[in-house]
Amino acid sequence: MTKKTIFTIITITALILLINTLFIVDQRQQALIFQFGEVVKVEKSPGLHFKLPFIQNIIYFDNRLLNVTADEKEVIANDQKRLIISAFARYKIIDPLKFYQTVRDESGIKLRLNTMLDSSLRQVLGEVPLVALLTNERSNIMKKIKDLINSQTLNFGIDVIDVRILRADLPKENSNAIYKRMQTEREKEAKELRAEGAGEAQRIKSKADKDKAVLLAEAKRDADITRGEGDGIAAKIFADNLGKDPEFFDFYRSLQAYKKVINKDNTTLVLSPKSEFFKYLKDLDNK
Image (cartoon, rainbow, N blue to C red; front, side, top):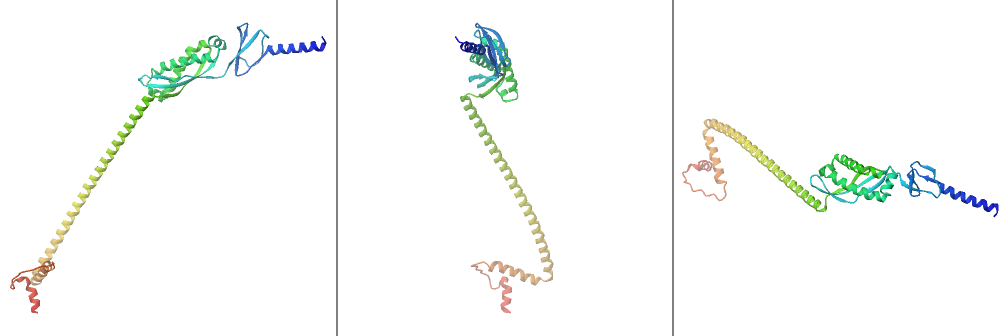
């Protein structure tokens, strides 16, 4: 065997040993070092690390925030209102050794968290009314759920950072009933408003009619007063002048009578020739 061959073998062997001795932990990861199936070291620091070649092996775990979305479930609130809830939790692996020993991997913890999220949601939401989810109280409710889950996850080597409700809907049959009730209430309100409007319109009309009647009555009263005053003045003038020239006023009154009687169409008068009614007409003929 030549020196070149020996050198090549030594170089290849050294490279294989080096490759199996070095490992890199990414800043997004943490690692467990196993030796003969047992964990001998937990490595959380990012960078280049060493292990015994062929004897030790590495399993990596995510160091970032991880999500678990729970299945939709029906929950009954404190006021006996039914809800269809969809929620998710965000967690972080803080102890990879406990995590590996209890659930092995992420699929294992998802099953556990789904169960814990389900029970915690039912417990906490069962203590509050439905309306609490629509107010500022919602954040306190989420914190209670998160704390309740965290009290159960310490042995799994994880920390639940956040719990959120993605969707909270009423069951379909409840939604239809509520929508129908809302529609009925809106129609009732509209009917009441229309009735109030009609009543107000009638009130305004009645007031206008009353004001009109008052104004007409006042106008008639004023007209009657004015007419009475005019008649009084006319009567006074008539009386005053009657004494001055009785013959003229007798003539004037006769003319007014002629006007009323003769002016009508198809008027027939049957009078004695000696009647005083046409006295002034006779006088005109004689003249």
